[in-house]
Length: 290
Ligand code: KIV
Picture 1 (cartoon, rainbow, N blue to C red):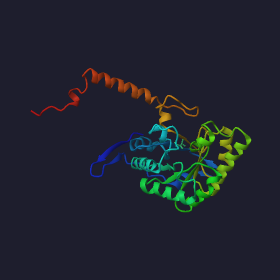
Picture 2 (spheres, protein in one colour):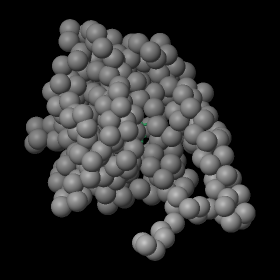
Picture 3 (cartoon, protein in one colour):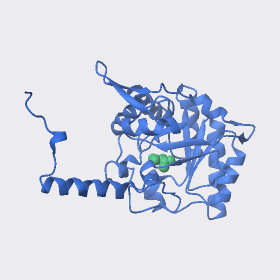
Picture 4 (cartoon, protein in one colour):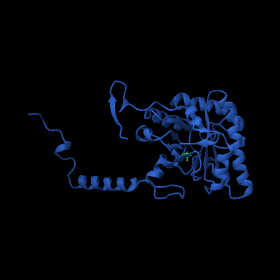
């Protein structure tokens, strides 16, 4: 589907042509799984900017403003240093650039774990500043009380179990989880605890496939896999990984493009034109009117 944008100069709003679909809601996402069955898998991609959101929106059900922006946008080594302000500003840009998808924003490390009250204040700030519809937070049973507290107070929550990157300093890296029986049972029981607490969906990241399938079977809400299983109720990838922006490709990523090569080729051609005084040409310069 091809969408173009016309800029309304009075509001700086880019209006899409053709008119977009109605924006989905959190209940629409939750209802996609009914009696344990999801007929149409949920499509989620990360987005961090307005233009990226414009390009992805029509193809997705959910745009996730992930704290993976730490590495993807800011060149940080982990997601640990991400702040509420960073997330709120990027989420606001994604909301401005989208009309159809539910926008979910990650709660950064250190802004929700201390207490349900701390989580509510942080989530309310994120939703007020950005206009996003929901938050995502990492952790299983330990976060169940917080998920219930938020959900009962108007903040829809997406859970995140398995490999939880904000816990990198405890986990010691980003290896797949669920290889031992104890770990496998914990992932499934974590997913169940979030489901009972009221999470409207749960990301299952970096777990061995049978565990992802079992967690998907036992919870009533949709699961969204990344490095998990095609049998999850939906899938998510970091958009830049999927587009081939980075040399390193995690095993679970399927590359749909080689954008890094395209950008490198365009930059090299531009540099050659500038150095050869071939740019700007007559088409790109202003001449005095006769
Ligand atoms: O931050 C992120 O992009 C995520 C997805 C990988 C699920 O949490």
